Length: 214
Image 1 (cartoon, helix red, strand yellow):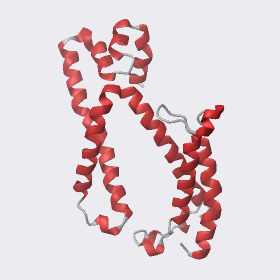
Image 2 (cartoon, rainbow, N blue to C red):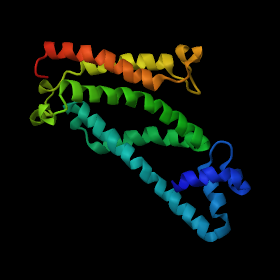
Image 3 (cartoon, helix red, strand yellow):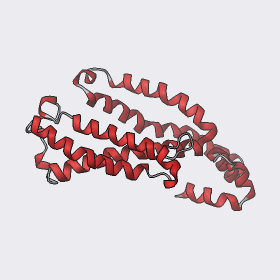
Image 4 (cartoon, one colour):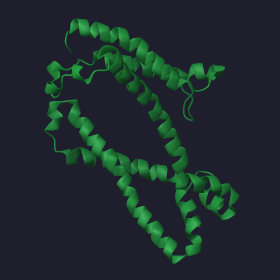
């Protein structure tokens, strides 16, 4: 909230706006804010810079645990291997994004919002419609044995169908779908939610008939 307040106030303070620039240079904004404190401000900036690496910790953790959950074979791989792979990907992206911080993070978050919507809707549909909102309906005793778990074909197929509709309806700086070009604007998130439900309900019902109890 403090950072948002500084960014919102930047246009009213010429020195802050100069540091912030047109591309949302957060480091420049902080440098302009702490400029009156001189040495102390530089010390604070160094401390902040050294702590930015902590922001990558959740990414490294989730990257490793996600791969471990894909298949038991990957669970045998030491987790630090996945951490190293994640950093190989993150460091070049951070170097590129550092020069265009604000626009880069907005574009990335906008794209992430699409797939998380479809993913979340599928999970909620499964929980409330097929599991009747009861956690007892989940086979927690065999959570790590694939033969006792849902096959996942319905979820994967529904997600891919939702993504196809997202592409048609999205409006981003690097791509605008044909439906969005017709004047609807960016309705990818809403279409993703609707498409995920429409496809998942019949596909999951069929999946449960073919593989009862899963």
